[in-house]
Length: 103
Image (cartoon, rainbow, N blue to C red):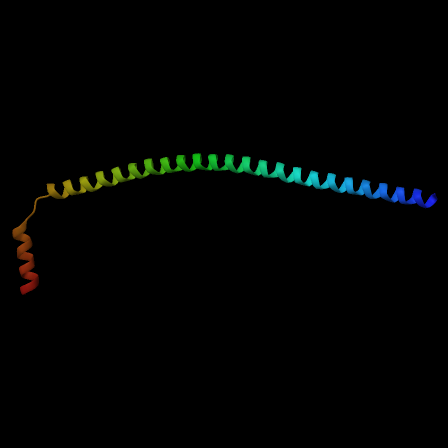
């Protein structure tokens, strides 16, 4: 009978160990599921925020680029106008060329 009690105790301990192992396995699976859900949630939030900031920066870049392009074009136009406004003395230029080339 003592032997039977020992076998029952060992069987009971094995059953307890099996249940504990199943609980640990279930807890690990639940933890992995929760981590996966949290990772997915925060990755989508990160992507949405990243896209928002990228769009804002792209918009600022385009605005700054347009401002610089307009300023550049205005300066080029002003320079062209100043060149056109200056009197051209083609006779003096031709005379200088003749003197430099044929002298």
